[in-house]
Image 1 (spheres, rainbow over the protein chains, first blue to last red):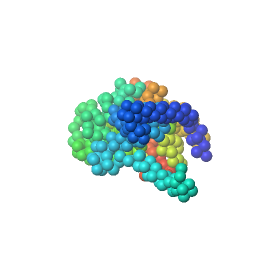
Image 2: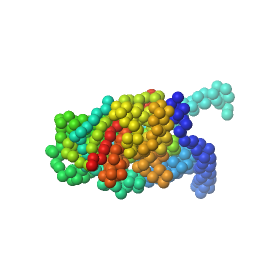
Image 3: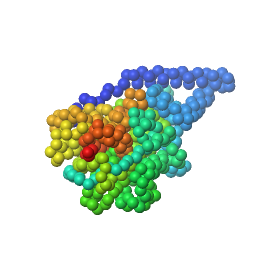
Image 4: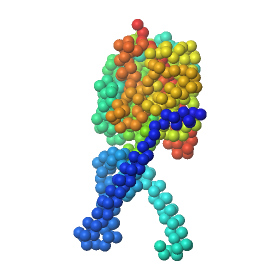
Length: 144
Length: 329
């Protein structure tokens, strides 16, 4: 009974708007990343596999820098999953946790809390990689 | 449980507030405001303690008394083990009661102080409540710099400290009566919709206060709830009407008032133990002193959850305490 009353007064979340923004921003991130790979492999004359490592390092650096300067959270608020899902979001989640807990010391603060949000991503990333790797090995002979 | 008082008066109060509150509609009414969240301290917890110290220093100046003149100091905060209150009490060296009922702490403190003064066990008391947005976000939610999209029903913890001095010496505002709330748990688990969590507790306390005092809801010029937010406010009105048949007309919610909700990025409004006192000790007291409001019922609402209880998907209990203030001629 009370739940229906609560739902009646619940404002509609802008899911569609958030999704469209996340889609566009996420896509833009992809374009930027691809452009970085192309630029690196062209300028440094390296294979694109190496260039993509350079690209990841660059994006992580920019993400962390913007978090430290204090305005990445404002961009994230507007762009949502478009920035949280890519590697920038991962770096940002670690950096923001580290910033929060840095006053509690290197060990009990930064070390213990830096993976507060990113820890789940790593744990379940490894678990799902294991499962899909197993499926790939068992059913496709590791071919694809 | 409703108490009546004849000898308890509000003599003075002081407020300090953060930058969001300073940019809100009552920005000019606060005694002191800050531009950043550290206010020259090493961490946010110390910053909250500093805000407490500032509000107390201002209060002591206003009432022209020393710490040794005060019989009882009551204080509470949102942070674990109410640490900002404990530190400030260690500096004041006044007999101290540390209290916690989340955002209902301010009125809980007022009720305790009023009962001691009415029973003549003490002559005066200071009640201080505080909260700090970043410190509370860090403890209860995500890292401050993380951002992230939150539901619209989320409330924004207010930053500031509010102190009030009560005594048996007559002044223009009298503490008339109070009602201690019951804990109500309606099975809500959504920590981002605390208005929905707290509205039934608020309704229960208002209803029982009116029954105990045999009053009509229109007896009060204003019933001011703590921090339900703009959506919780609607839930309360609707619930009060359906469940108790009471139409809340002279009603407002301090969480919906403290910020400029349209222009400031604060979701459904303010929250935190200091939200209600920041509005009351400034804007509401000003109106009472001008006799534009004569009878005011403050209903502070608190959501009594912990980070662990929320993670374990347990339901959120809530409480509301009410105190009635009257202007005396």
